[in-house]
Length: 125
Image 1 (tube, helix red, strand yellow):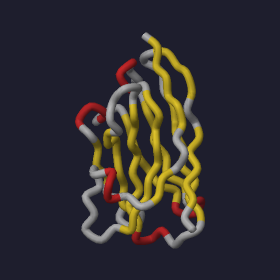
Image 2: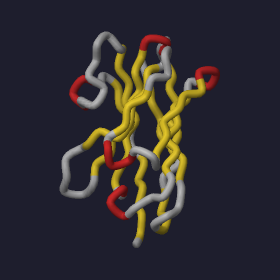
Image 3: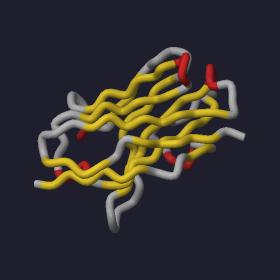
Image 4: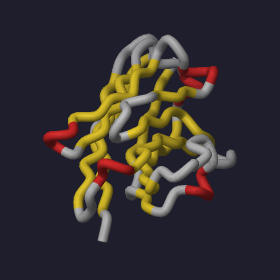
């Protein structure tokens, strides 16, 4: 059974940086896509970024391009989300997700099979 465990969230001021980690276990991830999603209070969950495990191809939502970087450490089966120049609107619970990548639409949360428990990111103004 695939398990995903996020860490690295916290409370920071606007302009600060955080790095989220997602440790994956219980599967062979060479054909997986890994995504980060977030959910702000009272809002729907939204796509943030995704990466292909084998190709390291990346995709970002427009609002984080140039500020966030998704990466993979294959040896550690860990996906990272480096978040720089954080804004109050980045506040939310951040979830890591995984799916076997056979033509998956990476920005669609309903296509992912496995989810972590989430980690809270709060950015104060």
